[in-house]
Amino acid sequence: MASVPDDTPFPDGQTCATTHPVRGASVLVAGATGGIGGALADELHRRGAVLTLVSRSRNRLEQLTVPGRRLALDLRTPDACARAVDAALAHAGRLDVVINAVGVVAFGPVADLTVDAMEEVFLTNAFLPIMLAQAAISQMTPGGAVVNLSGVIAEKNLPGMAIYGASKAAVRSFDEALGRETRRAKIRVIDARPPHTETGLAQRPIAGEAPKMPPGLAPGHVAGVICDALEQGVTDLPSKRFMG
Image 1 (tube, helix red, strand yellow):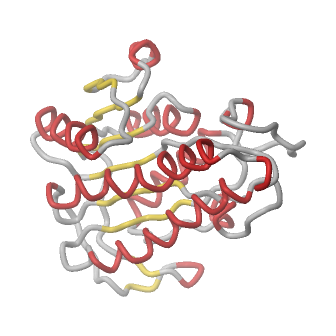
Image 2 (image 1 turned 135 degrees about the vertical axis):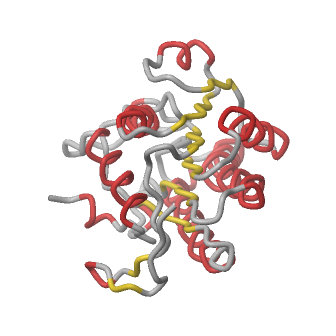
């Protein structure tokens, strides 16, 4: 795996860390049957990655057309996260990249949301990526990367999406600190914050009803930007990097 100095200048004021060519890399994709997760699986396969694909739905996993190890798991427990990491190691002999594309959304004023809905949002959107990273980082190849999708809502929260936005802001904060912790191990942590993307998630809220939204980005475009970041050594993906 090629590497470049940690502080090489990069466009938009970012820094360039260890690069990780996708071809031949062992990549674990959590949420592989979602809109962005499925697009990532397609793009990673096109670029030559060795895939371990995880989703709660076995039926939807079987409908994916890309090759790879398929694993039906609910990753909202530490044990399930460890099983996913073990599956990737068994499948490819190593683990280079972990991408978390799992998420749920709840809409509505805070006063209208139940505690159960709030707990599910934070368990899925915030605790799951923390547990998956915790299970993975000690098993990962130096020069690898952890990618979490927090989204543009982590940059500016909105009324009617306060709980969802707060859960994603927690991921962004976690990624910032984790990236510093894993620097010596040469594992990048990329926080990806794409703008609204046409994944269908807004039509499947666990509570409330989605507000009217403008047309979103294509999942394939978002996947391409994330894979470019993996190959270019990017350490952060703000929303503006997905535009244009």
